[in-house]
Length: 456
Image: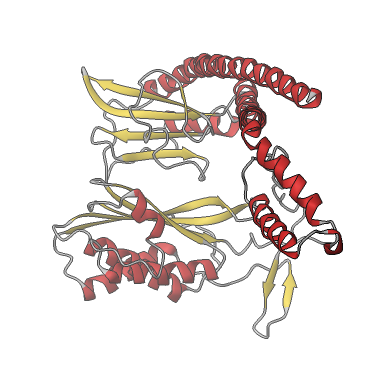
């Protein structure tokens, strides 16, 4: 009895401590939320100065989609590229008056429209992005008392903000652990109180069961009659059956605490690389560039457009292409690249039955591979002004088993074929889209100088 009472006292004390700890953790989490807004605001003030300097260097007439471009040697582009190289900003995106992207610079892994997807956008004030990857800032561009465009910048997360985010995760972990302890000790206390209230009701039955068990253990030759022994046996079997039923809760049952899962370290990129190419007989040679696709990308784009014109009526389309002449060679055969372009342009034509601009542009870029290496590549964008894709459609648009009701099945099959060809050559393909604005299918083709392996 004394031990049971001590257990109840311990459970009550632990429950009180857990409730106090829970209140402290919740208050601390609320204070951290306010601290995040303060740090984001300070970062936003710095970002606002950078954006205003960028806007002041823009021409008086803001470029507009699809023909408007911001030259790479313009004062605004040179200024913002220096900030990207220094690491002061992660990405900058310039939208025209119709909210179409006309210029972007920064890391390719960042969302193309970042920080614009945040709703509602807060102009001239810094805010933490939803994925906690940076601080966003949006500033309107005023020309002649009218909004001629919008500039959005993503700033890197400061050390203070990273520390606050780590503290927030610790507070959340503490709240979860505290809730588990409350549940465990609360269950123990309730079980103890329940047993104390119920056990007296079963005490007479328990006493009778013990007496009958002792009576049944007496040898039959010591019984006055055989009938008495048989009656005792039946009564004993009945109480043994009652004993197997869960009349009283077991105090030994406790709720298991889930194990802590430690994330594995991210793989690092190899520090040494060796150029490697294959000869016609399959042997590899170091130091020699692979001659796979020496055909100019601009020429392939024009050939793909000519092939498209033989398959579809393009009289209501405005075809716009842009490709430098000095792009590096890619690790994909020209005929395969041409087929990928034809597939993407066919899809763009099919989603614009009423016509509109079809833009195909190429440039030297880089992308992050599956092992977190930054891979030099040639980037090709195919943009249309169709009705766009929803977030759910973008997730499954490259799935060969996907059968959307509002999209022609040929569209998905062409994308699946294009993805297979691109990934087979070491590249990747993805889509960025906004409903009602259009879609942008981006192809990254690895160059012949970027294939690397470790070793001497």
